[in-house]
Structures are given as structure tokens and as C-alpha cells.
Length: 302
Image (cartoon, rainbow, N blue to C red; front, side):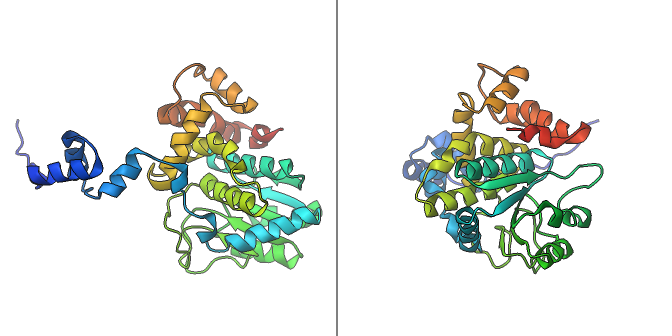
């Protein structure tokens, strides 16, 4: 039995297609596709089709980034003990991995903590917060979590431990009273791109640290890991995410990261094109599995 269907047609003229095609430097067919999706900005189209690392935004545009970087550099200079507090999913694991490796390469006294999925749950719980004083740490940096941990942060800072929160999840009107809170979703943050994954925010922290430490560009060695976490977290592949993933995928196919190289081999993706499908449905689930059936920290053994 047939049903009546209502066809919704985009109303744009052939002249508009021709103008956009010429201004954006694309074919009329592609111009028509962009117009059908409501995109008529030639500069946006050029950036979309030609992602460039030069188009990444200044990391110091993120609220509290300057404070976070200065505190971390002070910890490095004073050999303070830094703990990276992550999460057990792909986004959290990749975030922890790149920050830990970067700090370790720069002679930091650094360790990490990944909560147990079954016994401790997501993010900073009061049970895990109460473990921090006994670990004799001076500075905690969260990645991919912490933006709702108001009481836990209060407990940690009350024990004379500074905490920097880096996260990408939606915020309330206020944020925890941490030393610094870096999250593009802060209501008082004017950062132009809001859709970074947790690992994207961690990458911006590395980018800012590299600038302040006079080693700019050193963070780019992690783009393969950042692309892995970005795609696996299912954030929109637009803006900075699109740039990160484009360059990260090209690096991933010839990665020098032993762990990632082994994962690609075990997953049967060796010598094949690595794309978002391979990350989302082949590599990512294998990383997530560690936190579901065992200890996610095994993914971070260096």
C-alpha cells in the first residue's frame, strides 16, 4: 500500500551554484551539494576541503589556559609530583597518554591514575579523591573529566593539593573551585570552537606548554593518538577536529608509536588505509574493552 511523500527541495538557483563554485574554487556539482546542506560561505568550504594545522586556534584563547600552563611549568621547575587523572574510555586513555608522555619527556615527576570502571566509576569520586593525599602529589591534572566534581575538588584543595581540570563536557553555570579549569564549554570561555574531544583539549594544553617552553610544534608528534581519541569519542569532524583527524590519520598509517602499531597489527589493519571507520569500529572498541573487562591502566604501561 503506497504512502504519499512530501519532497522538500532546497530552493537555490543555477546562478547561485555557479557563483559559489567560482568563489570557492569547486565544481558546480560540489557547490550544489554544499548549498543543499545550507552552506554558502566560500571561505568555510575552502577550509573544510583543505584542513591546515595553521588554522588551529591559539590555545591561550581557552579560559584559564595561561594559569594552567604557568602552574605546570612551575611544577616542572620545582620537581613537584604531578598526577594525571584520566578516564577508562578511549578519549580518557588517549588524553592521559599524550599528557603523560609529553611531561615525562620534559623530565617531570609524573604519574597517572585511571579509576576502576566497576568499583570507582567515571570521573573523580569522593572515594578516589580521598586517596590523593596519601599519594603525596602536589598537582593533579584531570583529562576528560572533573567538570562536575565540586565537592571532590574542594576536598582535594583542602588537603593542599592544586588541581587543574581539563574537560570537554557540558558545564553548569559555575565550575569547580580548582586552580584552573580549561573547558571550551565554560560559559565565560570565548574559544571559537566548542566541539573538541577531551583529548583535543589535552592537545591544546600540550600546544600551549610547547609554546611557553620554547619547543613549539613538539606536540604534533601526538596527532595520531589525538585523532584516535577524537574519532572514537564521536565528536563532529568539523573545525579543529577535522584538522586534527586529517593529519592524525596520515601519521597513524606510519606511526612510530609501538603500542599503536601493535594494536593496528593485531586488529588486522596493518598495511591498510586507516580511516574513521577503522578507528571507530576496529581500533577504538579494543581500547574500550580493557576498561570493561579488566584494568584500563594496562593500556598506559610505558
